Length: 397
Ligand code: C5P
Image 1 (cartoon, protein in one colour):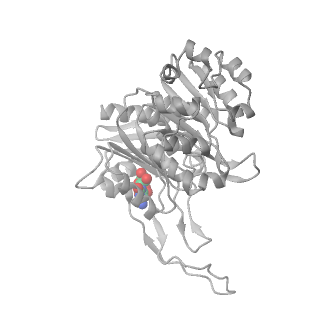
Image 2 (tube, helix red, strand yellow):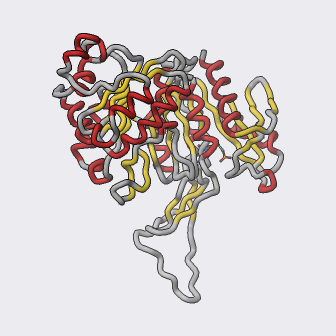
Image 3 (cartoon, helix red, strand yellow):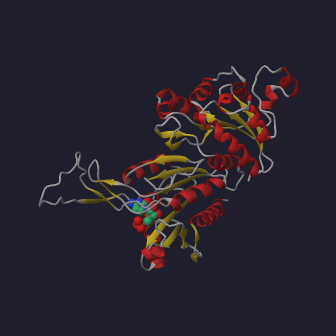
């Protein structure tokens, strides 16, 4: 995937620096060469010897090293790679980058480089949530830097939350997307995914069994073909893919707002299992259990996001793809749904419990377009995603 590519890997001073040893190995497995640079603090966590031994190249550490400057000046070093990756990007390193500091080799290279930069932030949850870090993040994104992670989970400091550095495989996926020169390069594609949660009161909600697996796989496959993917996701079981813009929502109303906010796009794939109804009057406080008196919930219809976008007079995406999860007369129902909603394509699947599709790893779909109905054999959700992404690339070409 990365054959012939060179990554300038700037290792920052955080405990996640240990993952960089694995990252170097995995990058090489994908055909990339790695030129490592370490900050002073990084050398407290892993040694330049380990890094150099794995990279098969010198680990650069010092801005004022006469030997280095004689062999390859720091400006030249900043230009050797196809991509600069900062991992882990600590709060301090992000602040220096956002402020334009250049007081050591790493920050000077980041100032001098003319290649794209990706950061993999990693820090304690409070440091991540600190307003200054979030400001710096917004600045770096505004400057066009790519961001992968952080993930949520347990951290070396014993706390739990967002702040864990993305795993090496996720960083490599994200690198693949940035360096991809695929057929969807320059195309903006929206993907909705996951279930929605419709609140009853502050602690209860109505939901469905969607895992978000198919929508996530589609977002990942589209990004792998070079698309700029905006991923609007309800509370799914699976993590969003790396290298896409994620907008997390809870309810159908929030999903509609998010979708309207990201238009215009070249294509929209509506894979979310949006709840059809919400509770008409959400209670502001927890509904009390009263013996013998059952609560009566009145429902209201949710907006049909796919139908609204499909029927837009202005700003409709060039290609709108909907899904139809059916348990009976799959093709007939889905064909009628395509007409009713006004989308261009429908991906129809049978979600009867015996198929194991809802929440499972495989899917058997029919693609319904104005050219007719195509039955695809049962295959992994990843394969369905890749096939669909290729079809979308064909349609947008
Ligand atoms: O009507 P039904 O829920 O079967 O339609 C499924 C398709 O419509 C999916 O593409 C789903 O993402 C989309 N949808 C939507 N908003 C809703 C309901 C469904 O976008 N409120």
